[in-house]
Image 1 (cartoon, helix red, strand yellow):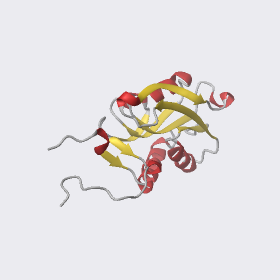
Image 2 (cartoon, rainbow, N blue to C red):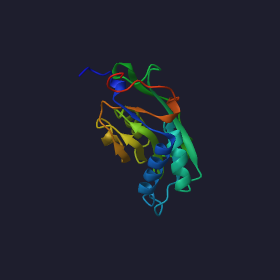
Image 3 (cartoon, helix red, strand yellow):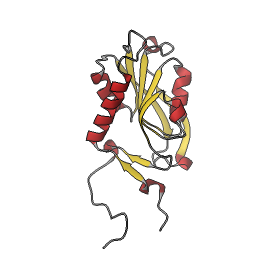
Length: 172
């Protein structure tokens, strides 16, 4: 067996799948907010958390939606040697956020956990939910739907285009 590059152990997510998994996350979060089960606001960690946050806010009928922009990867991808310290580029409305009480912070994936760790320091009482989680970052997420191995590369639909792909084994 030949060695594969890390991205070749891929988990391809379609638009239908991210929608189903985000709805499942919303159902898990329904009634779990501190205000008689309701959430005050949904905050998406950009960019990956934007699609799940939109779906979750719709499912839970949360009309207040904001974003926090955190950069933690070089543009070449997310290999460990391409990671950098997480940096907040844009914060949500401070009056809305407070210490995070009643705020549902959404991301598509928790990988190493560094992004959520940084945001948790800012809003310690917020609830952190991700659609997908890798073992190194699972402890930073309060709620998630699907666990994948640390060496799996997730291909999200917003990063993909349809094209021919070579077979996994052989070319015959």
